[in-house]
Amino acid sequence: MSLDRNIQRNVLIAMAKEYPKQICTDEFCLAAFGPTFNDSESYTNKHFAEQMNILASNLKYLEEHGLIKILWKGNFYPNQGGINAKGLDFLEEDGGLSAILNTVTVKFDANSIRQLVESGLLKTNVPKEKQGALKKAIQEAPGTVLQTAVSTIVGQGLSDPIGTAKAVAELFGVTWT
Image (tube, rainbow, N blue to C red; front, side):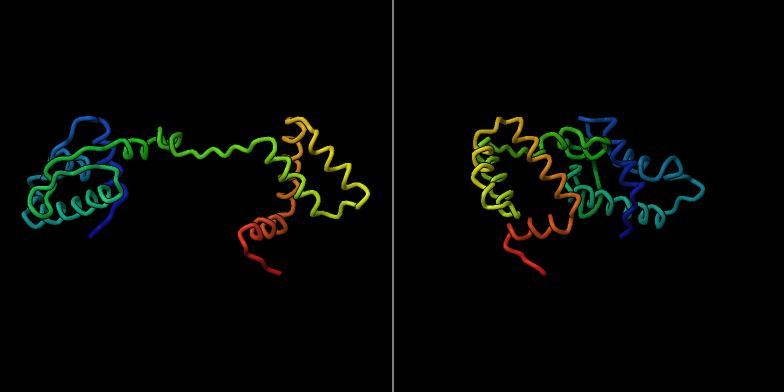
């Protein structure tokens, strides 16, 4: 088996150019090996078999990753195939629609943010006489102030990455000294 990124990319590009149609074995070979494939001067049955094994290995690899669909003729001879949406997105520099569709958005309501800010701040060394006023201020704060508070907390956390890592790890039940 010989996995070759250039062969894989060339085949994906050839399939993408024909999308949604499929391409046939000759087109696979031309994309994979260029115009020298099946050159009458260097062509032998052994050479053809070696190239087909290389091609089949790379096509199977791409198929197993869900980027293409191949119709196989016999045990390991690609008859025809085409690229799918996942393969097209793979070729796109920005990840295509998959990058948009696989984005996870986390939303917190204002009360959840208030609780997070309050519990985070009260774990610090806030003097007892200031804690009541701080709690009240957090409960009455408008959303924009909460947003600024969260940004400030995150910014401060990033300035102390070890401390932040420890705090986040503790949320998951992992502690270290």
